[in-house]
Length: 264
Image (cartoon, rainbow, N blue to C red):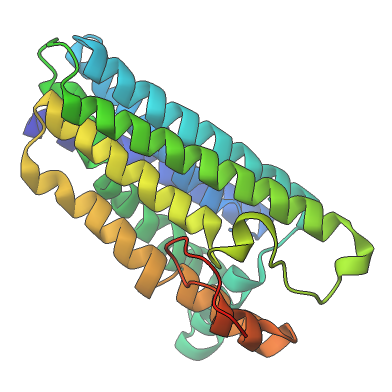
């Protein structure tokens, strides 16, 4: 298993090198978020190929759930990038590295985007990779079935949340307003919560398939990223500055887990 995981890590780094070269050519790294999603599909499918194919229903479930999540999210993010252009977050991150640390664009693109995110996406998806590699072909256990249900719930939650946000943004009358209807009434980050639920569900399926428990580091790191690092905190820091009414939205709406809104 460790040898095969090392091979998938090398393959993910190779994928990031190719994407980095492309980003230097177009002077834009904004598509890295889509590569984050596609890269996890790539790693898990490659693990299955190294094993010779899934041995049983748990292995197939891990491939199917990862692929459904990754292709849906990656395609959504690519379409958004092509429609909106450069991502201001990455413009600021690379701008700081170039102006304050004297990096070239190529060096900043590698160390602030592709070189960092490659190992991280591999680590998050390691539970699914290990589950595919460990799968002995046994029938799905109750734990595996529960994991599938949780993962599908997360994918559905994230998909609906993204669709509601796209529809809200498409209406010119909503410019400058805060989306607080639909799933956004119950959590300020339906898309991040969907990611969270999906990968904890995938982890349960992987454990049921025989993956070692230490692969919990993947969903734990993803949870930290979404709630404490580059997910909700970075986004909300910007929204508080530029979106009137966002402070009121924060006071009445759950920050992550879906909960009934508080009374004003």
